[in-house]
Length: 279
Image (tube, rainbow, N blue to C red; front, side, top):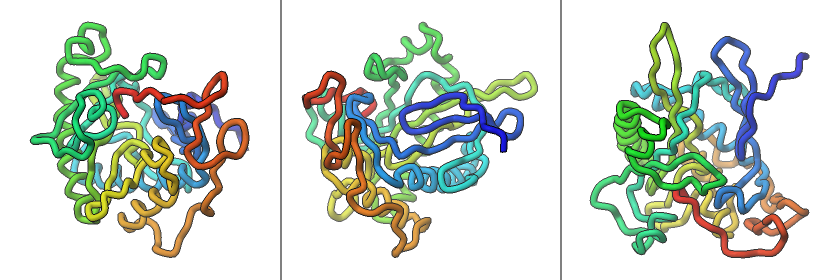
């Protein structure tokens, strides 16, 4: 069997050359990072769960006419997706004040917002994914005004659909991050939704208890990360009630075995991590 060509490796996924023109294979890793990779770990089964959850969500979005890169789920960890040129802008949709927004603006976490807020961040781990506005994006050549308009329209439509879908299974969609990519067909260029939508990229809170069912459990040393991701999958109906992707406690950290959520940083020691604007 021929060895596949690796095109790119990020914090949570590896991209390989696809079997057909203009396709790539997206492989979901178990690696967990937060605070722009200041905090790193590995959570057994996370990649399997994120692949399954993201596949399900992208299929639903395809069904309602949202253009996405998703073609099919290949196996437990891989998807076949369209090759795109990623726009270097993260689009954040916020329905409830939480994370970096609550800290940055001095708003109590959990405060409902009168209307959904859309934010742009420049994709750069080195710079901490800084907040930007339309003028930054256009002047610096990261996106055109038309592309920004398209991203906002699609982001709000996705928010409406996902908010209703998750409310139906008792989960509040607090906020989430989207990435978009350019595709080229017959001398035409257009934008489609790319990357993933999963507990890694969303904040999910149980509507009755307020329990966090997302990567905040890793960011904030709450424990039970894989259990929370499995709960989201079960409520979506894509994981049977008795299925389990991992054994509790099988979490490792760089530098050896550690408790879930321990912080590993260059130079050693543990210090207060810096929230990226998109977190």
